[in-house]
Length: 177
Image 1 (cartoon, rainbow, N blue to C red):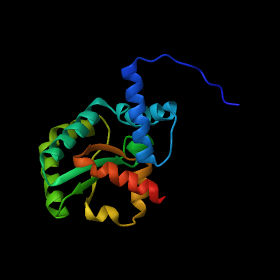
Image 2: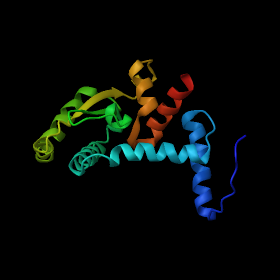
Image 3: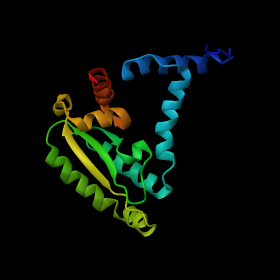
Image 4: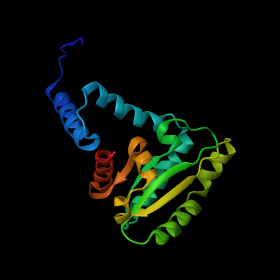
């Protein structure tokens, strides 16, 4: 038999948890307890917070640069970093969703790599092999049935998302699995 413990919360804290619970139903397609919601949120944040500060700075700068391009809809971290199974030679798997031409975005990511070379060099000097390995797709291709999307849905961490397109994608994928 499950034990219940009454806890007093400030109304604003309760409202935040209640909203997260409602959103979890939309995203995961199932009801979740407050405890499960907190664990899920912390696990995703924890995977990024465990990274070396230089690697975190690099990832933040990379996302900042992606966000400057209006054709880029959003980005999701996936793979070993999202699953917390990375090692010092891991790459940074990043789903990048674009409105139209993936090749333009590939050229743009090359420019970001050049711009962030100094941070990247510092990462290599610390003995890490972290670099961004982009998977660039169009919004329309998000509706295709690809096995990689199952992994992204299961472990992905949305880093930025214009107009909730990635949130909807994650929810859509959850419903189909």
